[in-house]
Length: 364
Image (spheres, rainbow, N blue to C red):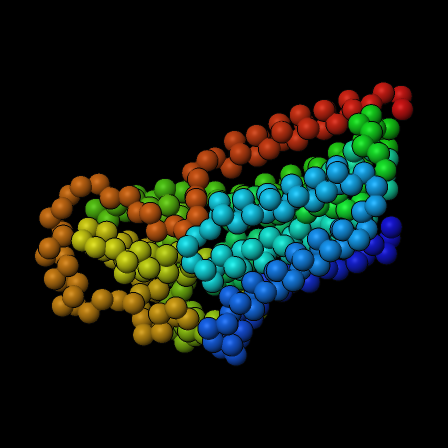
């Protein structure tokens, strides 16, 4: 068990630590094999799936109908997932499918650690481990520049974990799925569940809790910063970037989320038309001026409009007084009170712990 656990943790660590370099790896493949990128990644996925099915066919010798049913369910669910989450961008979709297979494999490794336990934890532990790895992976992606991590991606990782677990059950059925747990097992499960929930809640808080900023005639927008924090950040970056602008993408660094939010609004301004363009530019001028004035890894020539262009847009749009709410944020930001959020998390933890501790005789 210990060796299997070490191997599963090591494989998971490689997946998580490699997150900052995935974009570079994709770019390297596209450069080395132009036009063959999807074929290379898709071929790797196909080989992995064929190998997994072949291993299952060789190893399954008893209870074939039921076990093949689990294998088929996992594969069909994976296909449904791929169709349901398709973006229409083939390059993006093939990477998401690789990610799906990757998390299914990690779950299989964790399942092999605990599948000999004669109770429900043989299924719950690998499920929880897979979800925690997904949370850590997305958290690292949120921390490094030019990557995005959000709760939606953790949930998508969870779909891959579930499919991986179903496949693993078909490949190596658990010894038993006893639901009545002894007191030691219940305490272990409570601890595991609490850590997983707290990790997910902390990630959600860091990424998705924020504020609605009233920019007066610039409109409203969502930010992880308060209006005062945005003003302070603008002053700080104006000084720091004067001699060291963020013109080079350093993947081994911590994401400057003030810069990231400014780039959201630049992208939305450049994609928009009419009122969207004008209001987004006002938001940038009032809250993200340093992002306009200094070269960044995304805007090497700066992003401030020439005076003539600004005057032309102002003349055509400034008279429009309709309320504007920016949709520049690429992932949801909720204006919930952190205190209320964590009170809800605490209540959920208490409820889950109570349910688990009742899953067996009190004197077991």
